[in-house]
Length: 405
Image (tube, rainbow, N blue to C red):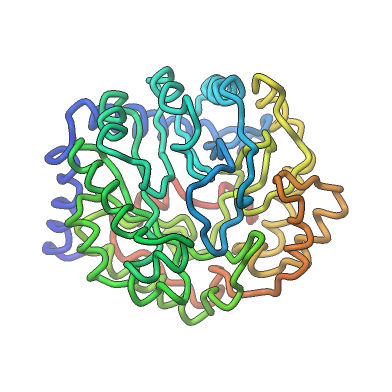
């Protein structure tokens, strides 16, 4: 890393204490930074010693309800399944007993889930990443999040004006989402923007121009995903090809040298080896039906929490389905089985008699219509991290945890 690049990284990091409320910065440093570091160390020791399994982090989809109709989304359109407030509270309590204090909160649109902010406020010792399309993120909501202090909104932007409307199935989505972005900035929150990269938005969003645009709007991090064509209305033709994924990885590595915000992805380690967070056991997902799922897009399961979520730890420890799933995926590829080998995934789900966890009840039929597309496993063409800071963080906190032998 050159001196100029080092200074650029320092400037990006200093944006948070300079632009955000001191109380929010403290909550971020302690609830997320310190507690997450300790939690990952506990998880690693459990894995090494063969102790009862519990993931480092839990992603929670609180509801299927949504105010948009996005192409390629795995959530059931018009679905009404939601966790009860008692279940959500119980999930969080169970995780805290295992030392896990960080949660990803998804939907549908989680801001349509009544009582969510009250639960977040109740668990003031936790840290929540709120995955939202931003349309309901008004100035009033943003100020409430400032008061709570332990939430970082992650606002999904799937393209600029025209592409957002096409992908989202609604009008004027980009501007309405930007209103949510600006509300977060006004409230002095730590917040980010997310983007699911596909062919139709690649040129718009995988660019330095877009990085600088979203940084000017106040975002402190940009989280890139690779588009997964799933759900009732997938668009397989919009999935990235191998060359685009390689170019995307190269772009992210290069931009990390001096980007004005943090660039996040959870696909590769410090050496550029592919990873699956589910296969490593680092993260699993709880659906609106209370199902313990391997990951959010794979909506079939065998284990369901009880009415107050108190059996969560026991389910994770005893789940043969999830244990077999981790072993099968890690032995198959370092990438995404849903993209690379849907046939093998279907065989596994059928053999285990997994249950569709959605309202639409057509998930297995949807998978049977899928054909393999490129994933992020680039064996023989790995692109290692070039930024020493990202390299250090990934080497210490984001690796295979022994899953790949």
